[in-house]
Image 1 (cartoon, one colour):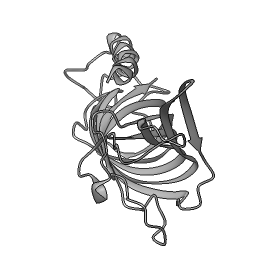
Image 2: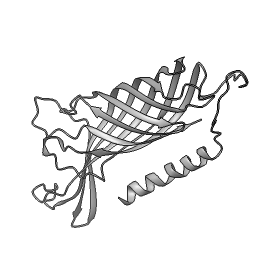
Image 3: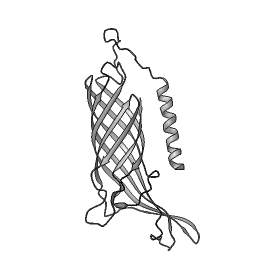
Image 4: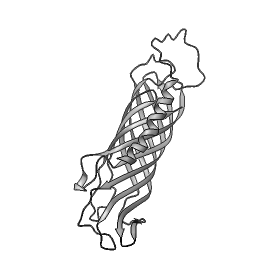
Length: 232
């Protein structure tokens, strides 16, 4: 949990910083509102994104995951195309890192015969997503307003590793095992997000398997929830 607090602190700081200069339009008059050449409510809008989330139950196949310590991080860019005041669509490109931490199991031993102190499964991926956006405040002015996103993502898991930390007679050691032959590098998820301007809350569900069916490997949890900060 110390690591998660360290990750959350800069996100909260950024959220405070970016929200500080934001102007909220309490009343919008289309006749008197000045014309904008760029901004969140124009025909096209590009923004950066940074997000942090937690892996959630159910624990798929009783994989013995430590919920609260398993997390998902992402950074990327999003482009939105406005179709009407209440509907937009777009795409997003992200680099993501997911860390699945397992509970300690005395039955699983390290190469030197000692108990493994920390065991985790790391996934680094590049994802491309497409979304539909529905706005709840069509007369919002040149801001994103309140919205709901529904979308789907396809990703390439370019790095998947088993990581073990354990004690030896000479000190602590870390073993990282890559080039795994039992993983599926192509993944896909569906996601939903509700937000207001730069801050949103998201949830996603992976409907593909991390591991090949021909191998007897416990599948890992499919759901994650978190918060996202828009950078613009």
